[in-house]
Image (cartoon, rainbow, N blue to C red; front, side):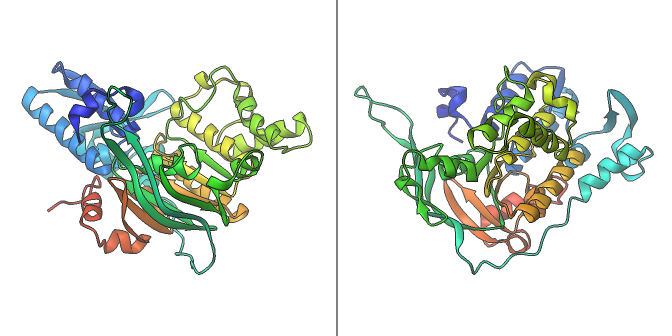
Amino acid sequence: QDPERIFRSYPHELSGGQRQRVMIAMAISCQPSILIADEPTSALDVTVQRSILDLINDLKAELKLATIFISHDLKVIAEIADRVVVMQRGKVVEQGLVSEVFHHPKEPYTQRLLQDSLGLPAKRMARETDRQPLVQLRNLQTWFGKEKSFWGKPKSVVKAVDGVSLEIFAGETLGLVGESGSGKTTLGRTLLYLQKPTGGEVIYDGRSLREITGKAWKSVRQEIQIIFQDPYSSLNPRQMIGQSIMEPMKVHGIGENAQEREQMAIRLLQRVGLEASHFWRFPREFSGGQRQRICIAKALAVRPRLIICDECVSALDVTVQARILALLKELQADEQLTYLFISHDLSVIQQISDRVAVMHQGKIVELSGVDAVFHQPANEYTRQLIEAIPGKKRT
């Protein structure tokens, strides 16, 4: 939306999904004969993903465009590909027509991929919500100036978060979905006061965050953590992984000494599917999915009560994604964690959430239990999101 504004914007002014779409536009602008699409829709919401997949299919037909479509999303591969190649540890383990490989897989690795893609961890029963909420958002507003006059005053504003009111209860997972640029990430950052709200109020555990000052912020920062969408810019490239995980422990006084913190960090790495030897490596030595798992371990290091998961599994393949979702649920049960789970992947939201909030143009347009949202959506925008899910039959 608003392509004129996007045209005049810098990358830091766009959301992750918007930046991905700009890269796609750059790639197809010279009408190539071969397009290597490396996870081109992994950062996009389902409606934009649908338009991109339709666009690529149209280009294939019009320009006879050969496409190598790299993805960990098997539902997308099933919809767009003619043939599929399955790789494991640098080698091709299986290849053939999509219909043959997906319906009659021969290799155990392919079978596991398909099983994980279709069989994510079963969701929990919705929890009772008659207790005091851990977080309350009251008419929260976060606005940004679009253009400035000669005197430095904004001519107009972007209402990224526009009067949002909701509650997050202790021990639950509230899923937050919506299109790229709908305000999901801004809402998460504002909840944590990484972005100061324009108006409204954030109440955490009975305390208004706008009234917290000085050293009182330290305990709040420990109790509320965030796992960012981009695993590449979330880690210090000059710092070894172990140091990155141990640093917040030291700040918050967790562990008696460096040796104990090192052992704790190694156990966290192993819990998220990495190895103890990774403790001594730098971020550049890891893939995007591995870096995201490191970011999850870092968030868990300070024993938080609330974790804002901002697209925290979007960079992971289906097998690792299933493992991380199972891990998040296990940790939630063991540590009584609360999650605000932000994602454009509705299948993931459906699996992990107790309740779902649907965000559109800065507003919450629907908020209900996960079954009600997915099977009996009350809002037309919600119905459009569900209809755009890859692999879902469209009328």
